[in-house]
Image (cartoon, rainbow, N blue to C red):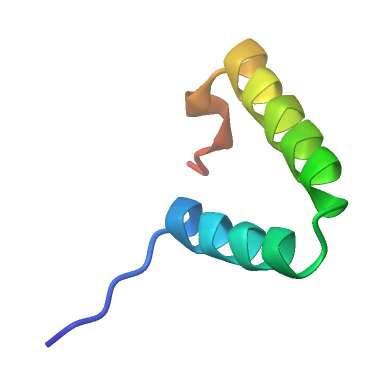
Length: 51
């Protein structure tokens, strides 16, 4: 049996736990998420691959 974790679900789990513990973090987590998605949208997902 192999456990294969992706980065997205792992970050979501950590963010959810942090929001439950410290609800004020929600604003920062949402802002960071939106900035990251915006940067990936502008630069393109192919720019993050190493050749």
